[in-house]
Length: 290
Ligand SMILES: [Zn+2]
Image (cartoon, rainbow, N blue to C red; front, top):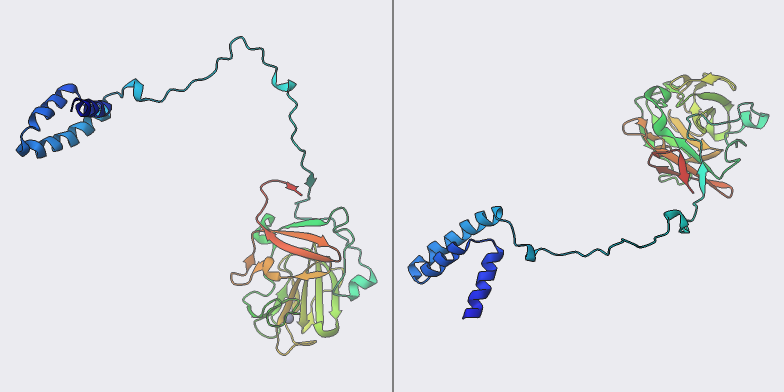
């Protein structure tokens, strides 16, 4: 019995109940009719007292630290830390890239044309769309709806088909220079613009081209009117996005629902003769770990 009381005493002591309260508790608990009152007192007083009274020090954990007094420790520089040096690579994130603007005969007569200044020092190019302001881009056919997506049911579809009405005005997506403007096989009347950001855009099936090769265009500048020349069953714009001659999904550049630019970077990686284009979050710095 004494052992149980001692344990109880230690329990209440741990909860910082004053000793006189414990004695009162012990006396009153002799009458069963007062037991409920005792429990209530224990609940309220125990809580309030323990909030204010300091805990006993011997219930707190004790930590031991070795003393460094008198020890002859070497300086930090004497340690030979080995931290592997990662390979860092500078990638140009400016909106303008070094691109070829003196076009060859081949450049002005073929939709697919490579630019030898892209991927010449590296297998990676970053197109920073998040860098561009509202004046730096334009949706190529304002008010249009998508009637056939990239790839889609026709896996060979190299662009996205946009429709408004016949002879509607098609505008340049970004600043750049017209590389090609002429009829070309199934494309019909086609305009290809090489942009300073490294991309190329293609506008085809036009009823009329409004620009010629070598023309400098700004984003939003009219380049053609919608039509159904070449292999087309209705008046529409077949719009392509390309890098170094290879087409990729225009949805990586434009949100065709909101008709706005995607606020992201395009990571373009050359693998053999093809280029993989991925959307990545804008980088917070100008160095990319390879
Ligand atoms: Zn198409």
